[in-house]
Image (cartoon, rainbow, N blue to C red):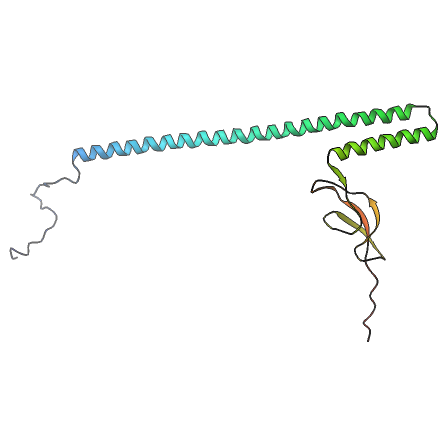
Length: 180
C-alpha cells in the first residue's frame, strides 16, 4: 500500500479508541433532557386527564340542568292546567240547566285556548296542502292541492310542528285519455 492511499477503517485489535462517541458530560446532559421530557410528558398526560374529567363533569351537569329545566317547565304547565281541571269538575258537579252548562264549558274552552296561545301554540292554517304542515289521509275530487276537509287540527309552536293536521286533499280533475 502506498502512503497516500491509506484507508481508514475500524481500529485494529491493539488500537484503543481515542475519541468516545459521547463524552460523559454530553451523556449526562442528554440524560437530563430525557428526564425533563419524560416529566413534561407526565405533566401533559395529567393535564389531559384533568381536562377530560372536567369536560365529562360539565356534560353531566349540563344534562342535569337541562332535565331540571324541563321538569320546571312541565310543573308550571301542569299547575296552569290544573285550573282547567278544577273548572271542569265544578261544571260537572253543578246542577245548572243545559244552556248554562254549555256556556260554562265554552268559557273553559276559550280560557284553555287563550292559555295555549300565550305559550306560543298556533293552529296550522288549512287552505293549501303543505307536506311540512299537513298529513294527507284521503284524496278527493277537487282543486289540486286544496284542502277539502280537516279531520284533525294541526298545531305549531314557532317553526316547529307540534301536531300535523290530518286532512283530505283535492287531486284535481281526472285526466282522460289523450285527445287523438
